[in-house]
Amino acid sequence: MNTDPNVFSNNEITVTYNPHKCINAEKCAKGLSAVFRQTVIPWINLDGAPACKIMAQVKKCPSGALQCFNKKMQVA
Image (cartoon, rainbow, N blue to C red):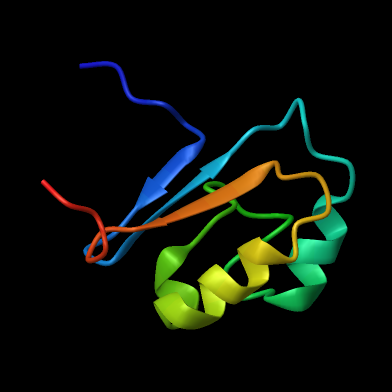
């Protein structure tokens, strides 16, 4: 099974990262360093903060390289 290394998911949310669009990863790392880690792989740790805080930080992404989807809001 192939997985996308730029898709991070837990029971509540899915965060996707498009490195080709990213213009300033440091902004995310400074904004929520327990989630967006610059020196650790995988660099996005969804256990580092509550989903609401992660979603708020993703909304601040200046390039749109980060996207967030709330699994509880999706309709099957």
